[in-house]
Length: 220
Image (tube, rainbow, N blue to C red; front, top):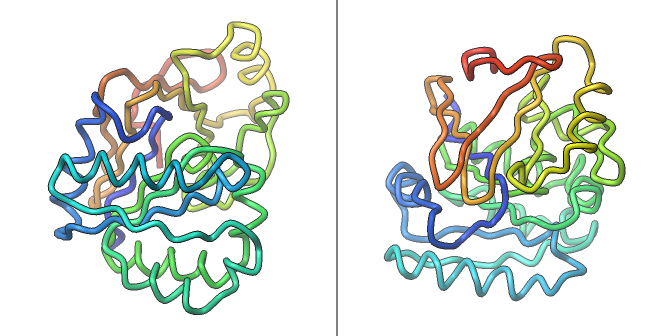
């Protein structure tokens, strides 16, 4: 049985992210391995520093693993760190870059092994988008291929800042029957090990199928 999965709508590692406490408790560890891959071109060290400050306030430590380029994701030493982790967190940034770095890599295989072994996995913004398939293309709101940890679900992060035009376009382009999930910043959609979903944090989570709001129970 896999570990907990948290899809975060952005605004990670700050006040309002109350779910991080429960995720730490579920992990049973005081170290979080942070992959700032999506922020490779946006000062990734700042993301790690922000994570470390936040988790220090919760009595834990963030360890940055600088998997920033494709060769880093193919490195067995990096894969070993991820495989042994009890809590792995994918930062926000560019979902397209994150996907291209992790797809069919040793680090991705290690991430799956850790999660299937019971580790906690969290992805914020780009990290949440890439873990799903299909994935919303941030360049225009259409759909592209994700990494399919969660299949037949698409995530829209920063939902509380989603423009009406982009929302309409994304819902119009969604494949028939596909749940599209809008997640506010500082908010997580969490899948428990028993397969049940719930929302936690400062904002809300909204699910659409077609143009109709539906319950979290529709999620796989």
